[in-house]
Amino acid sequence: MLKNGLFFFLTIFFVQTAISQPWVDSEYDIEIHKDSVYGYAIDYTGKEQALRCDIAFPINDTIPECGRPLVLVVHGGSFLAGNKEEYDIQLWMKEFAKKGYVAVAINYRLGMFQTEEYITCAVQDWGCLNMADSAEWYRGNYRGMQDCRGAIRYMISNKDQFNIDPNNVFLIGESAGGFITMASAYLDDESERSELTKEIAEVSAPAMQYQNACVPPEAFPIGMMDLRRPDLGGIQGTIHLENNNYRIKGVASFFGGIMNDFLASQDNTYPLPALYMYAQPNDLIVPFGRSKVMAGLSACAVQYSGCNYLKNVPEVYGNGGIRNLIVNNEANGVTMPTFNAEFTENYADCLLQGLFPGLTGHAVDDIFVRTKSLATFFAKQIGSASDCLSSNKTVNDLSFEIYPNPVQNVIQVKVSDNKDRLIIEVLDMSGHMLSRKSVDTNSDIETMDMTAYGKGFFIIKLIGPSYIASQRIIIQ
Image (cartoon, rainbow, N blue to C red; front, side):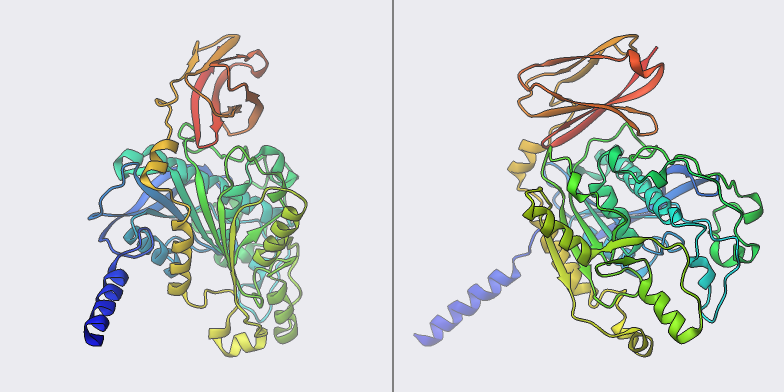
């Protein structure tokens, strides 16, 4: 009797543990498309760059009725260096593709203007981290955000090829990539832009000694740089603006952060993207709470290498600081994202980190454990097939029409059978939001006067609880 009971228990145990967890277990073979060009954009030196990505997807999965979730992975490197080929980035791309996602690792525009003063010390390339002013950090982050959003839209434009569900988009960023993914998920209104991303005074040319070590190979050399700093354009950037029909469900920030607090002014038209954060309290690069970028590294270099403190570094919120912002905002009745914060208890100082690299604070302690934890968190944000079918509204499902197009004065926006709260935005082709209005859900037709916008191409964007739809119009 005991033997039979034990056999039954073991059988049930092994059967249960053998059942795979959708979106969590790595169970599929994958194919990878390398170096797809997802768009073009102007870098900080005035040069147009081709922006590339790697795309991985499963080849022996059963494609969900509404398509596969999409995840973008964004590398770090202080907005100066790094690329999609880094170990962690490729691992996340491949692992999430094996879990059933379409996974994309992206490059984005790199580079910032260093100071005209040549700064050097015992730490190699120390001068590369000394910018002309703190605005350069904001602008580097902003360009990365625009590129990330452009890459999402590129994938949405190819959703049929890769069987992507536009309502299940996820982002993973590491270090500077974490700043980019946070901004891409939550900086959702033009009013949240830093003034430093608009037109500001031009800079003096960086010291020529910075050329080889500090200037990205894709950029113009120092002697040819355009030193003007124009308005960087709208929060959406300029890439594939016509394919803005997607929803970000979750975002991961591995020792990333935010430049300024844009969390308290979120668009609550639909639930905010869920947030996973990983950080270590002894991070020397991105502060755990709120402090200057590289405050720990700078102090360490001053103490042990005879360097001067880094110049023109901004104060930022690390993941610990973001957690505090979320908790405080929630206490004040502000809607905040659901979050999971995984913080270590690694307090090794900079000397110990130098002696024992395993104690480094600006790194993932166990990438496979953290990846499993992240995948489990993301999986909870992906609805069932029935949820997908009820929420995966498209332009055709909405009977979305704009007429006349081209238009001279007044357009009518018709959304048949719409029972949702709806917001209509008008954007220019650079992504600037020109107007925003709520629509009466009892009315199928909304009339809009377009005479104030001038002639040219514009985008009409509809935002509902479970969809975003857009269409280009011409004003004559």
